[in-house]
Length: 221
Image (cartoon, rainbow, N blue to C red):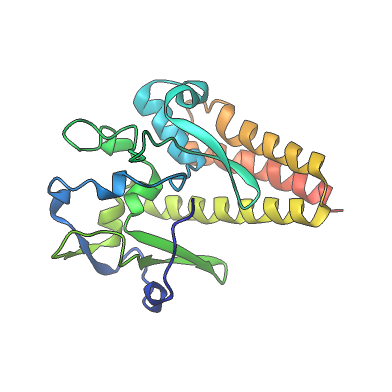
């Protein structure tokens, strides 16, 4: 399931320092954005790392209860596994609040914002039809994201996006089913299944990123 982006939403683009009208007063009991999300809450390596730490488990433990794998533009990636006909987030508690709010995934932090990638960077936009709560108040995007080391985080987001684009392009260009499977296996093993040690996450991600890019360069010759 992919969330539809309306052309009108892209008419105004923002940076993390901009004030935007998305404040919803702490949701006030609304949990619309925690239901009906299908496979759309795709998890990047930082999301999984934070979930593993917050829940004191490993990737296999997440896969047992909370996470599943689906292809996104030809690349197999983990997403939160919704529950029941209502497709309820597994971390939505009985009080209709997020049980993992402190270490919730990046897409949850972003909502109802989206990102558009262009010219080697990205900007934010508001998905106007996604959040029903009214009236909205103005909030600075950096405060809304509520994540430390924002500059490093945004660099990571761009690097991860670019790597997925490069990997998908490689698979498409080669048109080799075995190669595509191998790329998916390597990506999952390198960035999700292989445990991260006690060092800074971004340092370790950069190391794994460089190995992956070397592999893509060799395959592209």
